[in-house]
Amino acid sequence: MRLTVFRLLLAALFFSILPTLAAGGGHAVEPASFPIPLDEYEKVEDASIFQQMGARIAADPFNLAATIIFILAILHTFMAGFFNKLAHEAEHEHEKVIEKLGLTATAKPQDDAKDHVSFKATLYHFLGEVEAIFGIWVIALGAAATYFHGWGEFKSYISTRNYTEPMFVVIIMAIAASRPVLKFSENVMAIAAKLGNSSPAAWWVSVMTIAPILGSFITEPAAMTIGALLLAKKFYKHNPKPVMAYATLGLLFVNVSIGGTLTHFAAPPVLM
Image 1: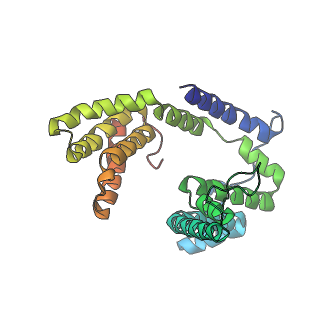
Image 2: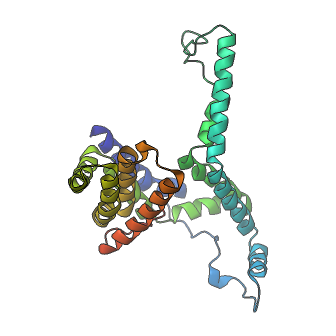
Image 3: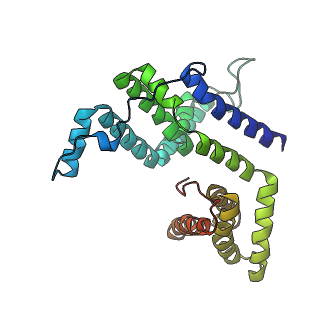
């Protein structure tokens, strides 16, 4: 509980001071000159989508850089499994080297050092973390924005953004990950699952129907996270067929988006 409170305070502090840090101490900052509003681009009559893209790239070359970076981030996301596979291979190679040298896997290179760790495996693991991928590529996006528009314009852009929604999502997700909310949600679904003798099928039906309804009260991202955690514990541990596994996730996303329309509280995008 103390750790959850600490995370909430840390997240709130970070998002509250980020605009001030970017603005250079809280001084008034002029709006950034990018991105250019869509209605300010020169209209090209009867133009194809590629011609429109070409005209907007000509107006601001940063559009091309941002598009390429976004595409690379998407491709990187689909390659996460590939990087994780490389990480496991690097770990096995490292273990063989340790064994060849006559050391144990937990042997330390020196007294005050950590255990032997493969830098290559750690790097591949990091590149394979889906949660980190867009964080990695946003650094490239910031570098591109600085190159095309300058550091001052980039700071102006950061300082004029509205961080209310991301701050809300971070805090609500931290709350949703706390034990009281998880146990309450699990107990509610367990009551429904008992109608089917708490079988995997009963839990599947319970999670797919009740979790989306909870999304109207604890927000869609929280309901989706709790639903996924319970599915992992009660359903996926039985190793369902890949088709059923992926279909279940897709149905969960759809159901949560539908359940979130019951109240106005569940506003964050279901893409979370």
